[in-house]
Length: 150
Image (cartoon, rainbow, N blue to C red; front, side):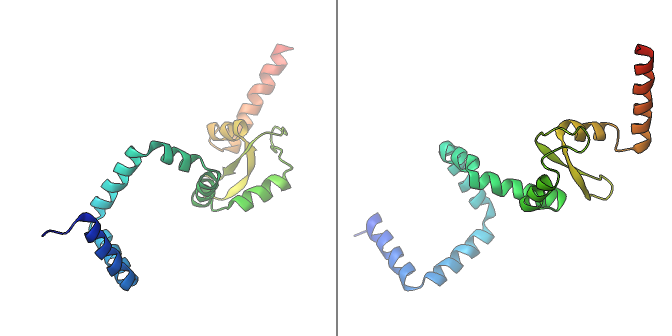
C-alpha cells in the first residue's frame, strides 16, 4: 500500500529532527547546484504574493537598508556619515544657503565626497561639468546680462 503525503512528510520531519545539519548541508548543496530552480521559485513566489513583496519593499527597515547600501556602494559612506554631514552643515546647502533635502555631491574623477548640496545645486554643477572654468564663464555671462538689463 502506498504511503500518504502526511506519512511521507512525517518521515521527512523525523529525518530532519535526527540530523538537522545534514539536511541543511544537503539543501545548501542542492541550491548551489540548481540556481535556476531557486530563481524560478523566487520569481513564482513574488508573482503570487505581490502584497507581501510591496509591504517588504516599503518597510522602514528595507528602505533604510537599501539607502545605506546605496550610500556605501556609490559614495563609500554610511547613513551615519551622511547624518553627521547634514548636522555639520546645519541642513543647509553651501551654495544656495537654503535648507532643503541634501544629496551627496562627489568628484566624478576621484569619487571622493565633497559635501552635501541641494538637488538643484548638485544638478547645476553636474550640468556645468564640475568645471571651475565653465562656472566662471557662466558667472561672467550672468553678470554681463545683468548689466545690460539695468
